[in-house]
Length: 234
Length: 234
DNA sequence: CGTTCGATTGATGTCAGTCAACCCGAGTGG
DNA sequence: CCACTCGGGTTGACTGACATCAATCGAACG
Image 1 (cartoon, helix red, strand yellow):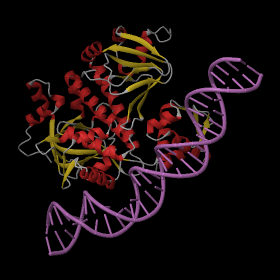
Image 2: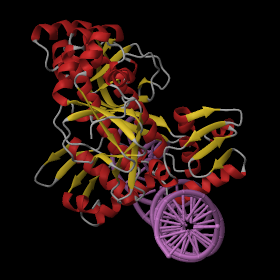
Image 3: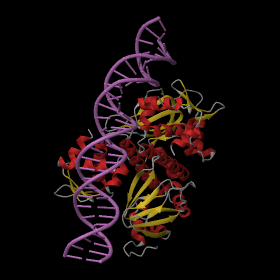
Image 4: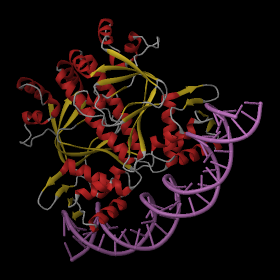
């Protein structure tokens, strides 16, 4: 499954990844030699909970969801990862198993670096360690926000919050409004914010009636009135 | 507010903290010189959301809660930190503001290290950086579990899950059962798992009736039947 | 001994989950 | 080119669990 896409040459891949971004050209080349490419089709799993991982995985292009199952057996999405994000970091230093499942949402190209290689890298080049710390802090903040959001009972607020998050991460400003190409289906959104797909549907319809959003098919939403969303969460 | 407790001498403090645990004695002494001690009484805030922090904070002894407010204005507890944990790490490298509030749950002794000093340390001693990464990974896993748990609708399961977590972190095995000295009030537990205090009360009473736990006042619970708790979450 | 704060218990209301029907667009095959 | 199927999405009716409101209890403290 080696990458032969032509576009994702080694150099490009290394440059794209924030944790390597402040390396010198020579270092970059050194790192690039360690990388193995792979790609996955929509619906494939990169790994599953409890899998033993021997490599750090970096997303070069594409989108994936990381999820666990709740005690009730429902899928709970933890993250949506895209270009530049890395996964499998929890077992970089310790020898633990994967704590979540990862499924590909659209054709995705990844770079992998063997655990031992990465460990060496991180010790030899403290710059990388600092970048990793930075990135982990960012991820912690995302998770803290998720907990905060999951703590709000009112499901209308949760939907509005996820829309605001999507605006930040995927929003494209145009003259009609802010266009969001949804990374998730209705059910996916539901599993991300911890409600049912019916509830997501209903709340989106409501926002549509109020002319706060426009719904274009299942994969696109246009935000017409961001302020209204922000006001609704006080 | 310098520490004058006698017990928490500088050396001891440094030894207690996992992120410094694999330093040599000389390095330890070096680090120790950078530390400033403080202590707080129950109910005091170490810092509040949006505060600018100029130091990393390490808990030497005691317990604190870190929390945010949900969109509905309810307190959502993110972490309970105790001995050896550090806080304020998100603004170590970046210049961001505190993303949560921290309130002391019992008399707590902390060590602080100026941001610039810690930045230097972490660059000079990659060992520390690795420990920090390890600790951040652990915290990420905790948060991922929190999200997973907040995703379960059934509040009985949530209460059982938090009891199992407390067994891991605070459980003392005795011949009567597993004794838990609760770090939080009923309301605190409620704010941690995202339900109301009444619901916590009711679910605990239920477990008491089923002779799965024993309730000793407000601050102690004895687990009589851990298996029953584990079974209940499937 | 009285006050206070947290915990418990009970009664009631509400919102989101559940169940079910239906819709719609994409893809398939005749 | 149309008929059919299929999966995801929407909508409606109903229900149940948890929040809310309220009263009472009880332990801790001065």
